[in-house]
Image (cartoon, rainbow, N blue to C red):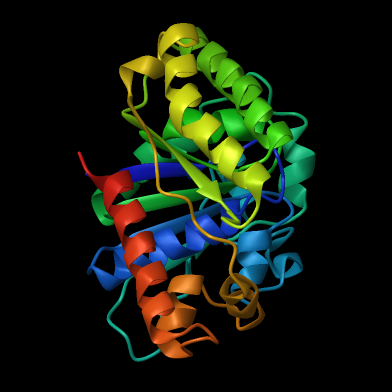
Length: 279
């Protein structure tokens, strides 16, 4: 059965889409069959593969909104040409945002879609990207997943925002009597030369697991961990301009990083993904 991973935070700009991309490519490199679901009306993940979200609006078999009407949603093959890799995408578009305003009370649409189409038997890993709001769409993805990955920037506002995110998540899990198996907080865009980042990395590492343990009785039943921080590197921006994950970019183009730095970053990302997937 597949691991279903939702990458979420109610804050924007915390590297959710970048995190989805490198998780996916690392899993594919390990021979896993991967499905990406873009559940963000901004369609950053879809655009990141060079796809135009407008092409998937209206009457279209790949319109993600079809799942709300129990209709077919055709996946897009985004694996490399001449490759046996299985990397598929359900693209997003702006219509999802319009539907998202009207789906209150329909919080299990995505879970039921995955179950009805037996996607956990087709894929080894399903990864879901989200919009930066705690709304009905994010609720759908949490209730469809067994692993929640939460990228966060190591600053005061971002760290404090985690409390609200986990409070909201706790309420939803409680309302539906649902439990996730694992929660991984991933400090992203970390600058070790900045004292603020050092201070709040330590706070996140030491205090957030305690906060969850003391204030979130359902979430605390999960395996909760904080990964090593992902550094702020120009390679992430370069990878985006090439429409690649940073993991693939480092392998294909090498970037401006020295070999030792490049290998260190690759090893770090692989270690993070191993921790996310580890039982």
